[in-house]
Amino acid sequence: MAFVQVIEYESDRPADVRALIEEWGQQQPTNAPDRLTLTEDRERPGHLVVVAEFDSYEQAMAHSAQPETGRYAERMRGLAKGEPRFVNLEVIQRET
Image 1: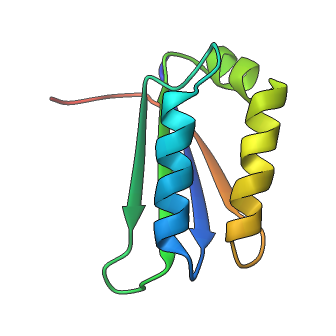
Image 2 (image 1 turned 120 degrees about the horizontal axis):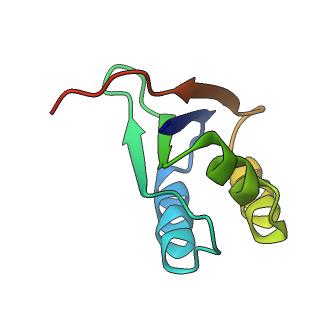
């Protein structure tokens, strides 16, 4: 079953967040998300949401357990104001 992880950040450095995500996209270790999307709330500048799509929960957890992912997360926390908020979602239906 597909799995989506949503990570919300507040940051006054959105350009740095964009650059870090671009760098991360080029250096992805194994079990990388199938799709990684960075968004910013139009009504709340600096409220950034990352959507990571995986084939399965197991793939996401294997990705999260890798040291490279931990180092990336720490760098992202350095750009954030406060702690990120994680939402872990099982995809139960998808319409195209």
